[in-house]
Image 1 (cartoon, one colour):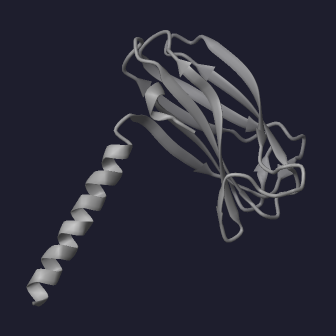
Image 2 (cartoon, rainbow, N blue to C red; image 1 turned 180 degrees about the vertical axis):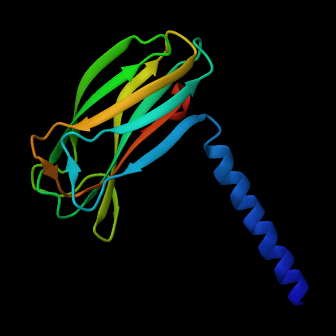
Image 3 (cartoon, rainbow, N blue to C red; image 1 turned 90 degrees about the vertical axis):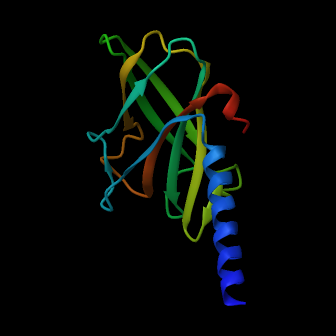
Length: 163
């Protein structure tokens, strides 16, 4: 009897692993940078190096923000630099809305930590293949911005992002 339960449990775990791994088959890159507990210094940047293998495929680029419930603002301004393999640089300013007008945190949360996915570029084709560098700095004018836990970057096939 014990052996049947063990095999059933292993089967359920394997099915779950296959299901979860198949959900992310279009993910090209998904990584986070942890912000120090003392705060995100205005001179510090989160850097992501991404290998793009296709100039033909369309991608969705998402910025992920994890903030604590003690974050003092309802939004987060980010300055994003994207540097192509040949050195071309594109700069953007992105307003990440983290809370609604009533102060309720958006996204998903557990305990005092909240996670918001911010669409950055949808259905974009990279001009060339190779390694792209994404550099992200906070633009909130605070010397040490408190309450942000992680900044993340996710790139996936354009058809994969449905949110």
